[in-house]
Length: 81
Image (cartoon, rainbow, N blue to C red; front, top):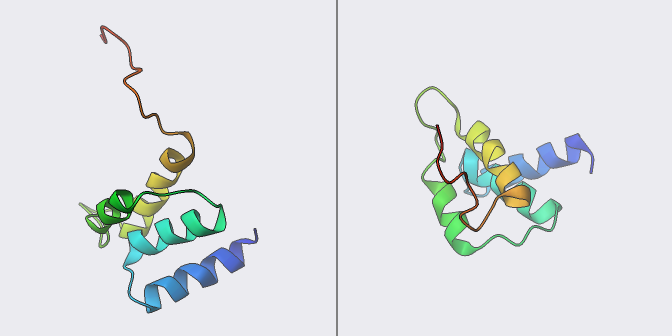
């Protein structure tokens, strides 16, 4: 996948009504064939215009690794320090 093609898709997604975080999530989900539940789509709306001093697009990019590698079970340390 070419970066310019991903950028164009994100810009089109934004122009068609998604905000920044939603547009990035849309690009990742559709271009990398990630099955994303509707609840995740809805959750990305909460960060669409950003939070704190981070933009919504950055929040969308931060969600991306979880789409591929995120855990779905409680597999953390039993007694964190």
